Image 1 (cartoon, rainbow, N blue to C red):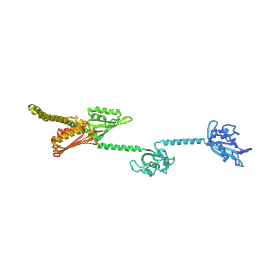
Image 2 (spheres, rainbow, N blue to C red):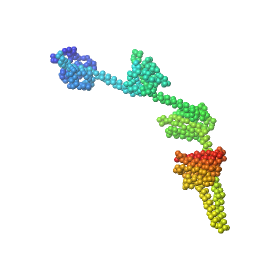
Image 3 (tube, rainbow, N blue to C red):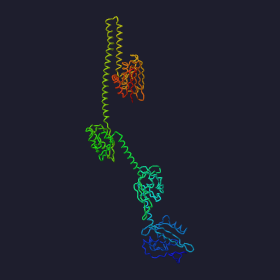
Image 4 (cartoon, one colour):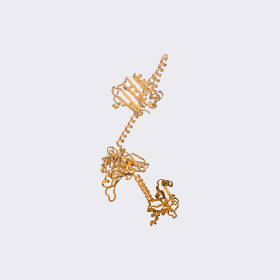
Length: 620
């Protein structure tokens, strides 16, 4: 058989290890020399070298069963598998832990092999172990370092990639792939300087591939810092990146072997800058075209910006307008100043968002203008920092409001006077009717009664005549009462009350009167509204009887979409509505009652073409 030099044939048919004492220490032996152990076929120890003896650390091993003396822990295998594989193939190889007597645990790569004789029969077992504890420790340390490095890269908010000299991405962290709109697998192997990126500059022009930061660093070896580039992601969205690149060059070499590229997604920043720029542009143009004076107050510095419109409004030049708030308050009218200051302070203390007020402001010519001022208060963490506002000149509007108020007062005075005049006229009419008509009828009845005494033979005829005149007087009194009594509307209703007017018109002047009445009116009008409508009809029909000399009259009362319409027209002589004297008390009364109904009345007439009155008002 082929003998190793370290072995010789004993008288018995097994091999024995021959070794010399070594000058190495025990620790050095454990790590520098491989322990050799020889056993018989039953794993009884027949010999070992100095490293194995140091490893065991105890005398008296010869002849003992190996696994009684050695504390071995198989990794991924066991003793049964070892023996089975040894019998089947003549060897076994695997990793084991060996725990020494002193508690030290060592990691070995162990090979177990049969030693065979000339007849190819196994005669002994050779166990050779290689201490890989340091190697395993270094592998574990390397794995831990790589894990820390990977965790560090993947927790960075920036993207990091490594590019080879061929321009392809050889490494990429998760954030780097995410910013590019790719997975890590899709990013690896991609060419950085590829037209597929469709890169652009901030001004929208194409970004040349040769000027990509990574390409510049690869070609020149110089780092590139904070280069802004826009790229189109696979889904079509434009992403803006701030890019840094650094070439990696080995000592003694001149050409980079790789380029590290780091980049941040600044899309939101670019978007915000664009929106801010557009907002400033809009603010500038709005301040130019609006008549309102725009202002911006910094509450931290007490400085205020005012647009050029404020100069036009106040008459002060830009040099005369102070940028502090005190100047503004000093020019507010003394009667308004304290109120305005307190209201603004109150709004800020209560953290309200909107403030508004009206006050008088002293202009450059020392006159005061009425200003309407409104502002939005901005807060930062509950602290007011800024107010943005606008001032509107209300002086002309105030003048118009004053004029309108005066006109309203005059109008109401005219209505009051007209109402009093109408009441007096009604009293006069009543007095005249009582005197000229009713009184005369009663006097006639009285005369007939007195004639009975003088002419008793005609008493029957005279008494009948007296009774006839008394009944006629009673009818006239009832007619007057009906005309003046407001409760008649509640009792009889609007339609029948107007019908009575129509009947009298037909009786007195033999007019043709068309009267149309919408029954829905009764359902939605109050008694007060019905009375007001009745008085307008009464007034207009009285005007027709007195002045129109008409032959035909139309009266329509209708409802549509919660609107009441009264229409009265005649074919009489008409009048010129532009002549003020024709707008008498009657028409003033009609207008006043129409306003009381919150309605709009139109009176159209011209000489020879009759007159029409159209009244509309809304009802709930």
